[in-house]
Structures are given as structure tokens and as C-alpha cells.
Amino acid sequence: MITRWLDTVDSTNSEALRHLEELPSGTVLAAREQTAGRGQRGNSWFSEPGKNLCFSIILKYGPGALPPLSAAHAVWLNYLSSQAVALFLRSFGVVCSIKWPNDVYVGKRKICGILIENQLGSDGVAASVVGIGININQREFAQLANATSLALATDKEYNVELCLKQFLGFFEELLPQLFDPASRELLFAAYSRALFRKGVTARYYDVLREEEFEGVIQGVEADGCLCILDGAGEHRHYHFKEVSYIL
Ligand code: BTN
View 1 (tube, rainbow, N blue to C red):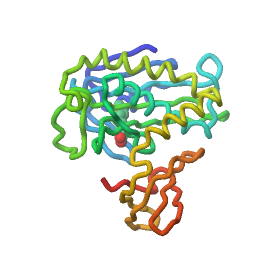
View 2: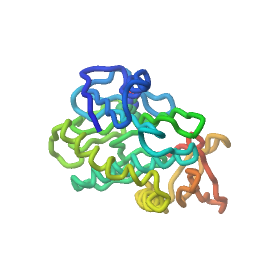
View 3: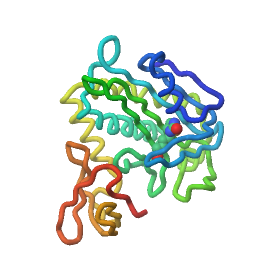
View 4: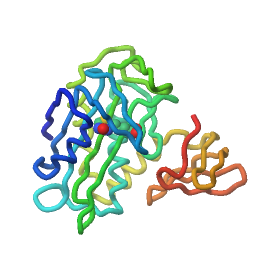
């Protein structure tokens, strides 16, 4: 993988999408500062300049690049990316879990967010931009009540560029698993084991039914849906954005 560090950019995902044609698979765009970092559900991603990791990995599939990836298998990139973050954090002794679909938490606090943007072609996914924000040295989060960082979790400071190299080592090691059915199962098993709130009674908001309810996460299904068993014994199945966690 080839990393390009940018001093300032609106969003590494936006920059990667703008230059997708000319940048080869395996290019990593990392920014010291993002002026308009983007998150899931149209949210903004805030990160103090120079303190954290904000980067996007460009992946391309098909001839001359990675093996093909069907649209149905695109969800595995969520599992892979969050698992790579979990391995990276655990290498510093940090206990973390993955909040479906791909946020990484330390206790009840978010340490990492992931925004994957796929471009579909006629044969499945043509390219992916895997945008990852990992809080490294930031210790104060004015806009975010429930955020944390590697520095807060371990009470140490880190070299951000070195952290990116370390993270990419984990990501590259996992990447071949995306294209092999047996390895995908292992990846899915590891992801399921790390699931935030699995087996724990907690509160959720059902977006379609417009109601809050109490339930227990049973797991994630093969199609990527989250399954929650509610108090009335109903198994509720959610696609992304159909349920939110009440923290
Ligand atoms: C989320 O939790 O809502 C996802 C946040 C993703 C943030 C990263 S930072 C690098 C990349 N560039 C962006 O604009 N967003 C992603």
C-alpha cells in the first residue's frame, strides 16, 4: 500500500472519490487535517488537526487489481475494516468491541468510525473507498459526549504516522480473507465475537416503527442484518439506519 499524507483536505473520502480514476488500488490518502470530515448518516466527523488518524484506503477489483467482489459480499468489507481496527487497538492492550455495523468502541465510548463508499460496476463492486477515523492523541472532545482515544485509553501519546503503518499491517494481512469463502467465515466469526452489547439487555430505537424498545442483540445475519430479540419475544431484523442504539 502506498500512503500519501495531505496537510489539509475537506475529506479524505471525498478526495479519494474525486481521484478514483487515476489512483491505483492500495493507495491510502491520509490527512493531518480534514475541514469537512464526513461520517455515517450524513453526519460530520470531527477530529483535532494533527492528533488523530483520518485516512481512506482505495480498493479496486477485477483485472490488474484485487480479485472480483460481488455486491452481496461488499458487507464483508465492514467486518474486515472493523476487525483490523480491533486488532490494531488490541495490540496496545485496549479492550474494544464493534458496534454494528462498524463503529469501534472502548467501553461505552467511540474510538473509531468507518465510512465505506462503494462504486458498483456491471460485475459487482468496481472500487471501494474505506474511510477510517481513529482517535489517537486527542483527549478532549467538545462536540462529542461519548468519544475516546488511544491516548485516553492507555494514558500515553503516540506517533500518528507510525500508528497508520501499524494499522495498515493488520488491514493488509486480513485483506485476502475477503476473497476466500472459508476465511470469510473466520472473519465473520471474529466480528460476531467482538459485537458490542451482544447478549446484553439494552435500549434501542426502531426507526420504522418509531418506538423505543428494550432488547438483546442476538447477532448479525449472513446478509448483514442485526437481529435483536425484544421483550415480547419477537426477533427484529434491521438493515443499517433502521435502528439506533440508545447509549
Ligand atoms: C462515522 O462514524 O460516522 C464514520 C466516520 C468516518 C470518518 C473517516 S475520517 C477519514 C474518512 N474521511 C471522511 O470524511 N470520513 C472518513
